[in-house]
Structure formats: structure tokens, C-alpha cells
Length: 73
Image (cartoon, rainbow, N blue to C red; front, top):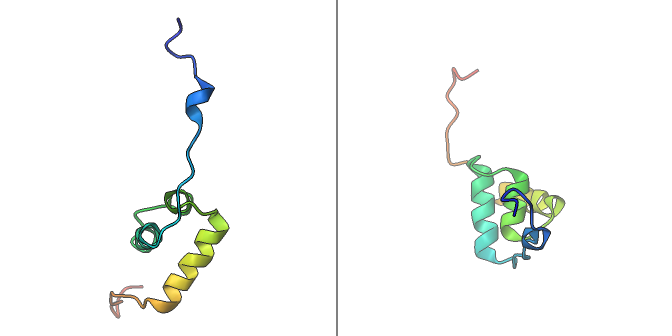
């Protein structure tokens, strides 16, 4: 028996249900650059395009909570 043989039956990824909590975690992960867009979309069960649109809405209604200094150029 080859230990490196891939069982394609085990590669199936179960769909994730989109919940407000998952979307919030994904948006905060994107905002803080702790998640990539594909990872965030997979986390909350959306397509990348849906996640991108949701994140743009998040940015529209959540202002930055940091300050940009004058000499940061």
C-alpha cells in the first residue's frame, strides 16, 4: 500500500453556511490583513466576487480606526 496515494473521496470540502458571525470575522480578517480574499470567501461560504462586494460595503460603513501621521510618506 502506497502511503503517498491520494484518496479522492477525502478531498471533498463540505459547504459552509453563511452566517453574520462568519462574515464579520472574514471582514475583520481582511481589514487587518490577517486573511486573504480567497481564504475569507471560503471561511464564510461565499464566492470571491461576493466577498469583495461585501468587504467594500464593510469599508463604506466602518471608518478607519487608525491615524496616518504627517511624515508617513
